[in-house]
Amino acid sequence: MVNSRGGGETARTDLPSGPLISVRGLSVDFMLRQGPVAAVRGIDFDLGREKLGIVGESGSGKSVACRALLGLVAAPGRVRAQRLELFGQDFRAAEAQRWRQIRGVKIGLVMQDPRYSLNPVQTVGVQMSEALMRIEPTHPAALREAGLALLEAVKLRDPQRVWDARPHELSGGMGQRVMIAMMLAMRPDVLIADEPTSALDVTVAGEILDLLDDLVRARGMSLILISHDLRLVQGFCDRVLVMYAGRILETCSADSLERSAHPYTRGLLDCVPSLDRPRPMLPTLQREDSWLA
Image 1: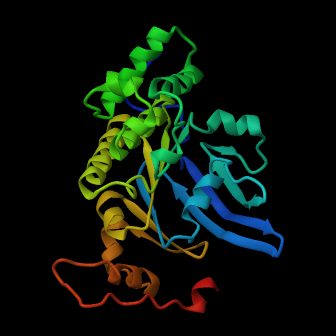
Image 2 (image 1 turned 45 degrees about the vertical axis):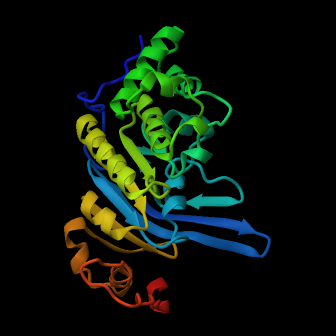
């Protein structure tokens, strides 16, 4: 029988006492015809039992860095690191089989738009069954029972209809909940959410964030939230990494983000519209070459 791990259960306890993820000198280059392009430039960070936000402009290297944590940087990309430890194990020279043992199983990934992540010609039930079968091959009726329990856990109102539906029959918010349920099927200890609310309206986005928060607390997971929305990360995460052009310019607690003195972080904060302080024109972010030194 498949264990669907309901909302009150906690994550694995056979974990290292230190950081779950520890990275030093992580770089990602893409070897193009005109020469190498650096997408991530020697970043350092650790992830413990926390909600970690990674913010920055589009193209700053947020998503590429997290894909490197899952061994998902394909050619012509090249990943290098002085340290790349996942759950206490060195993954710098890991083969494909080792990555498959950790990808989805211990580290789950939720992409920003379910329209491009779900198979458009298969029902939700078929796709969720594939994920559940990786845990424990069993009878289709047991897979359906476990899958419906996961769909209920992500607060879908009619899980049986969703199970039999194809992705185009679901709204954006429903599709995103399905993606989260599929990741939870693998019982990960770390969940990477890459712009999970960017394709959703404000109300649904808030519901998805509340859902993630509830699941992280109930299951004892760690979360990496990738976003360009500083205000969202400030109110949701425990700690924040600010990236620019492949580098981490600043690391701070979410509570202290508003008091940041770095000109890049201040510039990003100043570019956010405010209902309390309306301005005729938002300021332009002024970049400095010294930030890449």
